[in-house]
Length: 258
Image (cartoon, rainbow, N blue to C red; front, side):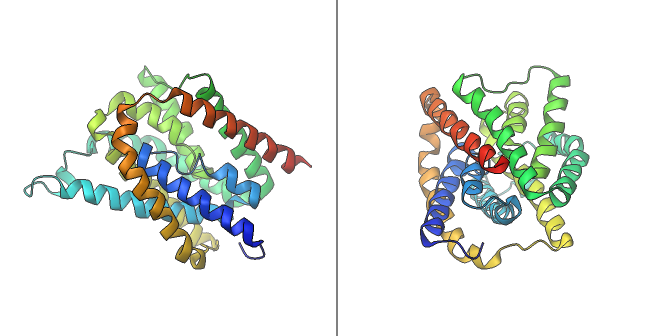
């Protein structure tokens, strides 16, 4: 990430505050709602994905640990009532192979092509936000399709959350949803980071020193807003956000083509 202007570093910092807010406030979306903006600054997913991955892992463990602390002392981690372990294990079995295929694609395909693929995926998500038609799954067959696609997209870019969430919303109790998803994100990220290490990808460790505290600022704000966001219906927020994501992603596609 070296060689950027000071204002670009400032923008990256603001985006990671936003990412932390979205992740802890909604329980998902920290990557999909920030990566398009980051790629406009530096068009290389392999620069930002290790940083996003470490943030996701750190805050997933932090949130789940806090939730587990609030459980009765007799309940161990794997008996925590805030996590749906049976469905988590089932979903991982479905997603594992597509996830590894996606990681292989990320490591072998050109950065510009991967950025273009990410923009196209984000545009598809954003259109569903604008139309107020969130992805939904109402059958086991569609559950499997969404999990396979979500696993693959997670492997390529860590933005498979909307597809995966659509399945979990239909199969996991609401009070267990966020913590179950955070455990899933942590496992998927560990696989990705291990692949990066094996492939010799630069994990951008020096930049964690200043970006992790900024992510924590967003995380704290999102934690305070989480209950309000659960209780509120926010179609206008998502329509505006979807419109912004479409514009940003279209700009990114044009930039990639030119």
